[in-house]
Length: 201
Length: 214
Image (tube, rainbow over all chains, first blue to last red; front, side, top):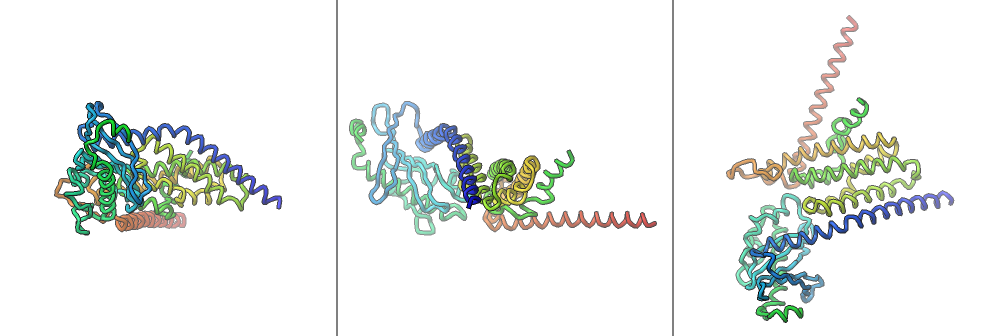
């Protein structure tokens, strides 16, 4: 009986020490991780929106889509005169080969894709991760919901899949389609929003 | 000094964790698609291996025998999360490309196997050397494996294109079957070298014995 208590106490002690150590490291790395995330986001926007310069104004908002609990983080990029230059949305899919894929997509004011940028994914290194390469990404440029079928060729769509990573390609299509739908449903009817309206968002 | 070298060499060659002990196959096969990933993975695993070996060896007399497995897991998991956080904060690119395989170091059999088989029974310094040797052995094998797979399967090494455009990479090499094939051939090659060496040593011994008789 006494032995058991000693064992429990020792295990408890070790768990407490490791928890303390982890919280210490967490507090040290919290800043850099946030910074890395923020830098990633900005890098993503710079990558997918051509002509994104420092004089453009960035407004962010969270959009929700019916039947979806995911908060779509959206950036509206305004010209200095407050007219809309482009949109960018952080969209996701759960159909990736390694689970969730999150990517930023950028569209111009006509809702045509200007670029995509995968942010978080756990696809197979060397195969599914090829979705980050331009050879694959470039096929989506200047495509929109009206002129492109976001399914892989195998399923009767227009996406040229990555060799031996069809599931990833399919997921990317799903992801982009969802993002575009959210953007169009939220902004298309009022795409000529004035700056005051955007302010109210 | 030679003793220290011997202990490290033990991990690199004599009882190489991947090719002789056949441990840690999951990360070896999964992350060895490009050299870059493989080396990042190997350094992360080596760090966890060395530090968990040191800690487990330090607390080996404090931990009751019945409790040792949960304690090992706690220690290993702590170091893995530590690596995960530090890597995310300071090397976000590498962290992104290794993805889920960083947390999976927790269940890497090399780490756990060495904790159980060596660190829990030996002195701190010896355990440190053992961890270092095993880590280097893992680094060596996973790098060679990844280099072979990247060259054959992708036509690149460290992301640099090696051949002209007419080269079509044999994609099977970076698919899972390619990993099994390459690792199998590597195990075969290693056994071949070891058997040859043993034979040579045996013949030498025989000759020496005969000389003594004469």
